[in-house]
Image (cartoon, rainbow over all chains, first blue to last red; front, side):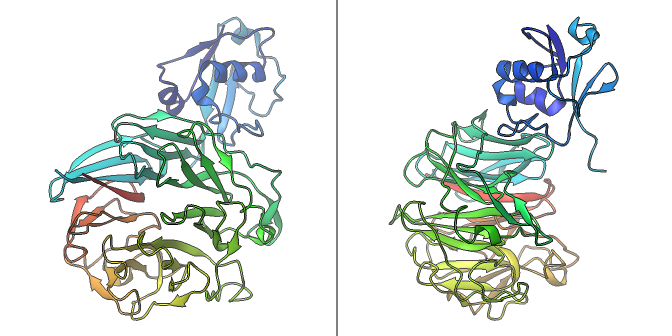
Length: 98
Length: 371
C-alpha cells in the first residue's frame, strides 16, 4: 500500500481528506503509482499528467523522502521507505505565480 | 413566476446569481470550484437545470463540470480532449511553426435541441462535441484541418476558439470565431468550413484584408435573424447581413471601436450593445467611465448608457463572454468586469445596478431566463 499526498485542489476534486492509499501490484514505480491512483480516482485523470501524451503537467511535482522525482522516468522505482509505507509519496502543485 | 439565473465564471471560481423577474433582489451562491479558473458556464436551452462549466488551472489542466439541478450540485464529466487526427502546426508568435496542443476549453455551447449535446471551443483552436452529456468529447476535425490552419497564429490569449453560434433554423450551420484566425462557417454540420472574413480590415497583419488572420473578438446573432451577425473585432465593430459572406463596419460614433463584448437585445434584432475599451494596449474603459453603448439601428449610431455605472476613476475591462441578455418582456442586459462587479439593467440598458461588487475578475456571464 502506497501512501499518497495530493494537493488541496485534487483532494477536493477526489473528495478525500488527508492522504490516500493506493494498492500497486508488483514493484511500485512512478508510473504504476500514478496508474493505480487514476484507476482508484478516475476524476484525477488529466489533472496530474496529460491524458493523451501522459506528460507530467509542468506545475506538478513528485517528491519522496526529500528527493525530487519529477524528472525521473516512469519506470523509476520508489524508495523503500515509500514502498514500506513509512513515508508518503507527495504530489505537489509547484510554487508558481509570484 | 419568471426569474433569471446568472452564471458567472471568474478567475477563482464560479457564482450563480438568481432573482425574480423584477431583478432587484439577488441571491448569490458560490464560489463553486474555488480557486479554479472558470472560463465559461452555460445552460441548456431545452433543460435549464442542465448546466455545463469549463474548469481549469495552469496546474491541473482542464475539467468539465455538469449540473442537473440548476447549479446547486455539480459532477465532473469527461475531460479528455484529443484531436481526432494527428495535429499539425500553426504559427507561433515569432512566426515559426508550433505544434497544435490542447490547453483549455474557452466556450461551451449547448445544443438548441438536445441537453446531452454540447459544443466546446478550445485552445489550440478546434471544435469538439459531446452527445452523451459531456462524458466523451469528439473533435469535428474539418475546421482544424482547414487548408489555412498552418497559417493561423495566436492572439495574446492563445489560439482560442471562443465563439460558437448555432442556428435554430438551420441545424447544419455553425459560425465560430478564432483569435487570431478569424470567423468560419460550416453549412454541413461541421464537415467543411469556409472563412467568412470578407470586408474585415486589420492593419496589424501584413495583408489587412487577408482571408484569414483577423483577431475577431466576439460575434453575436439574434435567433430570429440568423443571417445578421454582429462582430466586435480587435478594432472595429462589424455587421453582416448574409451570414458572414461579407461585412461592413458599423463603428460609427463610438468613442473607440476596440472592445471584446457585443450582444443583441432579446426582442429587437436591430438593437445591439458593445462596451468600448480604450485600446489594445490599454485594456480598460476610456476616460475612467464605464459606459455601455447601444445602437437601435443595427450599428453606426450609438448612444452611451451610463446611469448607475461609475463615471470617474473606473479602469476595468469587460471580456468577450462577459455580456449577456435575458428574454424577459423588459430585456435585461448583464455584464461582468475585471474588477469583479456584475451589473444588470432590467430596462434594456437605461438604468444599471451592481448585483455584486467584489467577485474575482469576471471571465464570463451567461443568463438563463426561467419561466
